[in-house]
Length: 405
Image (cartoon, rainbow, N blue to C red; front, side, top):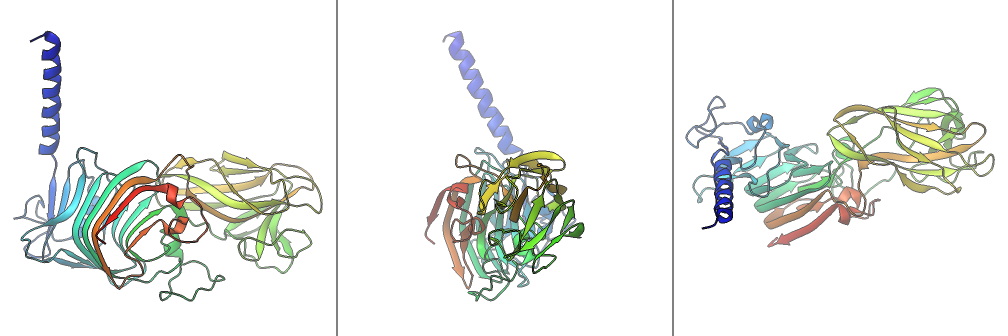
């Protein structure tokens, strides 16, 4: 045998040893609602934990498993995962125990705000053999980052998942009143409709993003604070005011930025992520000329805009990476003199273009659902399976397979 072949064989053997070591050191955590203690190690079926919430502080490593005892029931306990596996070593949330026993049951308190099992930016997971019920969302999957992949859901029974319809906490299926704001918790979580399994992308609400306050029948200059802090020649104007603005795309009022006027507010970002600030803007055409304005996050410039017409059009800033927590966003006029832009419908969402995706290779098999608003929803807030604004829902989530539903 040649030396080259010996080296290659040794390398392959080392690879197999490393793979075996990785699998050998993967941890399995057991949880049961009977015969258990939260002071147990939780790493064997003979000494399981009692509480589902024990896993919320875990940092799972590739290959780890969280197993729930068949026949067990938990009421009002929520699980949250922020770890990802690898293609070779997926993470697993599943069952253990006698197959004749019913699936593990995770039951909510019939609250619109409950998300019984949450996954934040997951990749490479197997989720199987669970029953989830009586909540606003059963299994909640949120993406605030790009290029995630590989989720497999199998043998999941979801039922009595209700409470949120079209972003509002009203009985399904309506009626809707477009003048009523979205439910703030549903908007924060990007929950457009209650779903047994919901896969969605981050959409962070901005207080008074439609500039409906302070209410006016004409217009009013700052300074004042109402969600936003207005300074300089900035204020709000109502449809039909002497500013000559087109009708607001959201509600009846818009922001106006005249000259170097500015508005700012502190926004809480629930998760680390890659975001963009999105809005509609138009130029004032009955006086002055084109106004340029800048958009900042924590004093970092993320976009400059010069609306060219008197009609509202959608705009988005460059994508920016930020950490969870409070950050200040600011719109500031960059042109001196009597030049004005109108701005409306400000919100923050995951940033992407047509070449990017939040997650791909999502598989749903043998999903049962009864008495739900929806059993499976894929990004309805961004328009994938609804008619809500947002044209790229189908690009955000790719390669979706559903079988035996």
